[in-house]
Image (tube, rainbow, N blue to C red):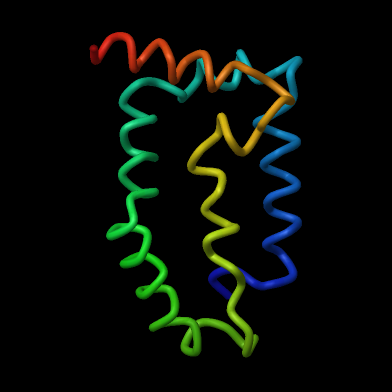
Length: 105
């Protein structure tokens, strides 16, 4: 299956534990969270792209999954905004976002 409804919550919990741990977030961010990565994630979050991705998944859902109900993909895609996703658990992603915004100014 592409993404099962049961695994969406587990996936989000796993992502939150891995990405938002204040003791490790800085090291994790150093490994991949750059200004270019932020731009890529912003592109995926843009409404037309997000809408197209959801439409694509819906169109293949019946072919690739035994489950009738499709998961909430909007919820699944919240990981593409790590500052918001992690909230108060860590400020690492928010700080890097601000640094990138300052570089663009």
